[in-house]
Length: 434
Image (cartoon, rainbow, N blue to C red; front, side, top):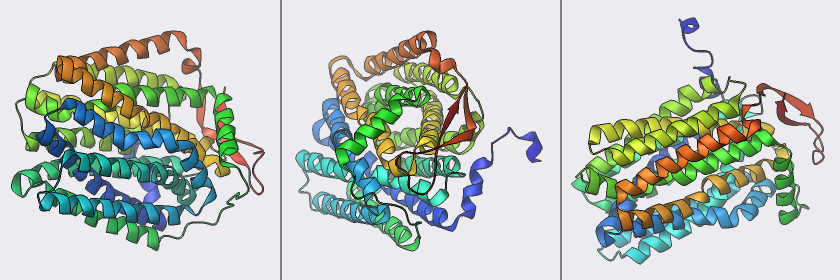
């Protein structure tokens, strides 16, 4: 039966044979569902309190700007300390933030500034959690399975993205926003339990390494790798002009589609469903393409077309279909980037390289969210989203025409073993370019 399926379609499922990864990814799926519930409820609550798309953009700034500012420190910390212990600390603190917001909403004391402060605090915690969490996946999976593990982790993330907003929309209509925040607080217990159950392999901590110097080494490493540079460029573009569209979805839902919180949840869930399918099934197929940068560039162009469709649509079903395609295509682009970044990274530099990638992917979103929110406030959500799509189409076309390294072949299946100047026990794996 499997011989009739596209090569690589089922590659990702091999990681479920790893006990620690099963625990980790299951906990991640539950906590991400809770976080996306909170994100949708938070956006709707701010919209109800302020009726300002600029305020929606500010929430995006507060969620993501800590990743941009703290990336160098967070990456160095993730390479130096026990990653599981760092995650236990950040998840426990994030749970307390969710409990605080639940109490404020339930008592009727919540104000917009409360949400802004707590969003910023959560952003700081996630700036440290995400590089360490991604690097821990590499530790648990081993280099032979890291691409599959990263894709499945992204799929678990997208399960949360698909279920969380839709469930939050129903909860807001049925019981109010406080329930969504309260369930998010409970979801952290599942991930904390999973972290306590896993047994990460021992690794060298390199405690004598200076944080700034270590980050400089990571930058120098990327400068020697055109294929990695291309991955980061694609991540930047889809973050600035693709993913940022989700920040103004409440305005699109009400102003363009005439919908309510339930429709908002369904639309955000459609994007998550597309991302789930993309990361779980499409990404391993595309990863077999040796001109992987070219495939990603074409994907960026497709995202631009889809975003134009979102800005032009006035039909909820059509917008949902566009968001399904947007989620799937962006997920493939990001899953390929994350997997190849992990394969390329020397083990002692993994968290720092991931931090750089996240600084670009997530750090770009505050600027994008603020710019899109302000533009939508001035000219309307539809024209602002259309402008995003046209810009993405233009930049993708220019890259395809003028950046030659995008069209080069990159062998993603036979990493070359080379000496790692930082390694003391084992070699590093880097991409072989030809």
